[in-house]
Length: 97
Image 1 (tube, rainbow, N blue to C red):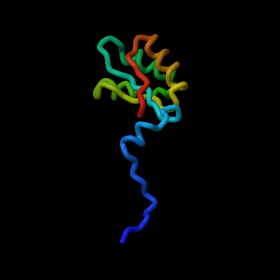
Image 2 (cartoon, rainbow, N blue to C red):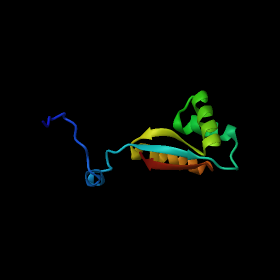
Image 3 (cartoon, one colour):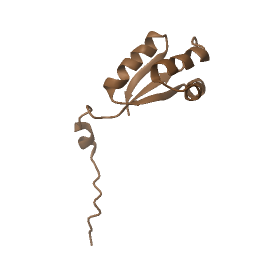
């Protein structure tokens, strides 16, 4: 007996055809060898509106794991933040989740 559970499994093709306009993105900060913790924390507070504790946690994650997602949302929202961080010498990129 087959029952309808309401579950629909998407195929790879369905996923590829979806529009990325409404997709979620994340701003990823990468580790580097030349920025200080203080500079990274200050940039996260200033541009990403983190509180000091959140910024410090992100800085430690970047240092220990090599990268950290510091913000998520729409591309149009994250791209200027990414540009600001990069203009301050940080390594950042907006990535599709």
